[in-house]
Image 1 (tube, rainbow, N blue to C red):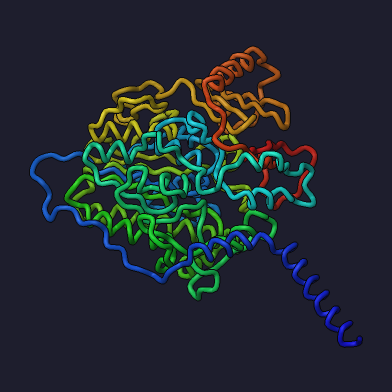
Image 2: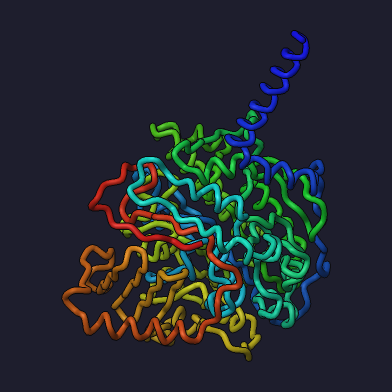
Amino acid sequence: MKRWLIALGVVGLLALGGYLIVRNYWYYFPGIMANLRDPIAPYQEIAWNQGPSEAPAGDRPPNIIVIVVDDLGYNDISLHGGVAGGRVQTPNIDALAQQGVQVEAGYTANATCSPSRAAIMTGRYASRFGFEFTSAPVAFSRYLSHGGEDALHQPIFHEERVADVPPLETLGLPPSEITIAEHLRGAGYRTLHIGKWHLGESPDLRPEAQGFDESLGFMAGAAMFMPRNDADVVNAYLPFDPIDRFIWANLPYAVEYNGGQRFRPQGYLTDYFTDQAVSAIEANRNRPFFMYLAYNAPHTPLQAARADYEALEGIEDHTERVYGAMILALDRGVGRIMQTLREQGLDENTLVIFTSDNGGAWYVGLPNLNRPYRGWKATFFEGGIRTPFFARWPARLPAGQRIAGPAQHIDIFATAAAAAGAPVTHPVDGVNLLPFLTGEDTNAPHQALFWRSGPYRVVRAGDWKLQVSENPNRVWLFNLRDDPTEQRDLSAQYPERVAELRAMIEAQNAALPAPLWPALLEGPVRIDVPLNEPWTEEQEYIYWSN
């Protein structure tokens, strides 16, 4: 009897322990299951397809490189101020603007990852084909819905919509859309993808099915930069951020080539992507190529190469120092790309476009990422959508010039197509920026630009910008000519302007389809403070749908 009671007690303790593990650590399971389904192989060399041994005689169209970085704040580059009050210098990124043309009012297509990338790929508002929200696992959205204990406004999770969400791997860019890679490949370009994709993982949605001849990177929304226990990495954990806890629990240190098995890259991921971009340029030096280089820095998880971290010993805050070190690696990568173009004799006839997918993130906990603008990633205030937007092409574009804009991600497709001499014959929302970048056309590229995520909708028409939010139920009206940092809401003063711009939003919305999948989560994001600041009653906020 005594042994039976002891055994029963042991079983009970094991059951209780199992229950506590599942309750407290269930968010580790998606990564565990992914690794069981798709194991990660050891490092493997990549042999990029070699182009001709000699360049053909005569003129050739320009090479085109689109560099998209991830969650870069407007103030993260030293041209605009720089991390830690300018102690983190970015001379190579700055040089793209100084040697090319910078668009002062350069905008992202959305305030989060996937829709912006879909717009870059297609030249169309992503909401035009239902790609309205960033693809994410249901478990991730459910986990984020727990919110913070001290938040005055809690997240809202729509359990009733879960059944309407297709499998994660099918949440992506519809194959019916024409991508910039498909368009340029049809014009004779070799098309290359390196880095983050985040536009679908099923076979018909992957880069190699969407126009890319070769693809090396990862398909999800983020990845580890190094194994967390590597001797050469310095980590910065964000204990106040549920997003950070989820990604540390689930993200792999892995890449894949042309849909093959995942494998470990080599070294710090930003440097690895740069190494591979250099090799791909060298392999294609004698034929026109289009490269979509999608770095995942400085997106979380915050991990720095130790040498970069040690180079910033003057920065006291550990998180800011790691973040700054990530920017150093990113800038070094851009410098190596440009140096390779010079060494290969390709510098003059290569169009390089540099931008970010959205602004700096509130959940990083650093207050100055988007200065002087208000707002963060996931908001349509300028801090969430205003981005460095540079174009450099020495053979065609003047050096050191600035244009007012506005321009947006949707313009990259038509601009690249025009540079390649491959006219766009299907409907796009973007415009060819080349006449504006050269100074041939001094008008504004757009009279109106739109943003939408669920019931949160925005238009910029001329200098006026209207934001319409359902939760909270309010509008913001700003005159960006007089108030570029959106300090003075004029909606009460100009109700007729509000009505005019709201009508523009409604007219644009009437032409859009329903989203391809529903938003499961509505999360509060404050406009003026990062996630680790305490909530107070007077703080302005929006609810972001995703």
